[in-house]
Amino acid sequence: MMGKVAFSLLLALALVTLGVSSARKCILSGLWKNELGSNMTISAVNTDGGFTGLYHTAVTATDKHIRVSPLKGSQKPTNQRKQLTFGFTVSWTFSNSMTVFVGQCFMDDKGKETLKTMWLLREEVSSPGDDWKATRVGTNIFTRIK
Image (cartoon, rainbow, N blue to C red):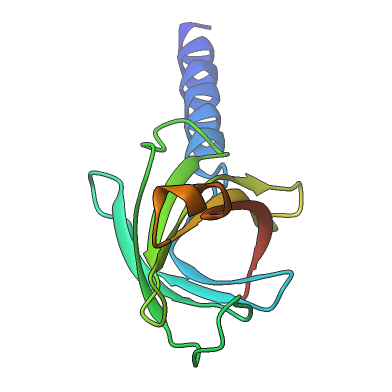
């Protein structure tokens, strides 16, 4: 009897461990595309949650040629969370502006990952009187390409 109880407890522990370790979590690294056609590549996230990458926007308010721009960010440690939060900054290489994004990665029941973000874009203006028009705000939803 004691052997059956011990075996049952061991089996239950193994199944619980397997279930916890196989729980799918959002992973930021990879290639993403938003609803406007912009592409973003995020490198592997380091142990501190930091990451870098490249952003190729499909839209701009300037008449300059669009170029790929670097991004740098951080995510909260993922320990037990499936739906992680993150933030990153894009320093545009073709204009005098920067954009900061904050967001959360969501995973549906089928394992599809989506990044829901809100951003602030700040462009350089020539005087404090023009400050009112220097910041834009918006949202983007990114889906994984690979």
